Length: 143
Image (cartoon, rainbow, N blue to C red):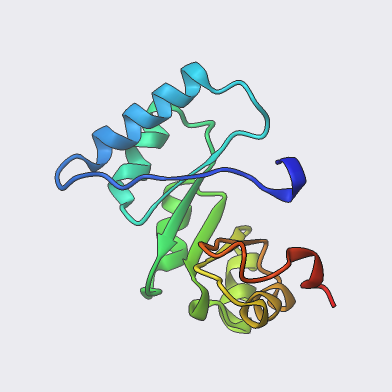
């Protein structure tokens, strides 16, 4: 978590290999990872996170969402997730309040503008995922 950054490993398995991929990655991390904090294992695929949890239940997990189904909080709880990662537009005052009340940390993807970063931080989102670190100065987001 040097300089306020943490590692998120997104599990993106091939079709039919979700649980196996999650398990292999979790076992590899369990054997090789020596730094603190441990990386967050995230995936859009429920089965990948099930495999990771079965192999190494102590590793933190996050369920990713492009859309919020009616049972989104139940799904994340069923996997013992510590966080929910959602497409940035899905985070509203209501969804943030619901996720917070359920005890989850929150992350948003893909945040590539300072205005969107400020909106999300004001809502109480914990982490921003970007592919444009050059697009804004994180130090200036609190202004």
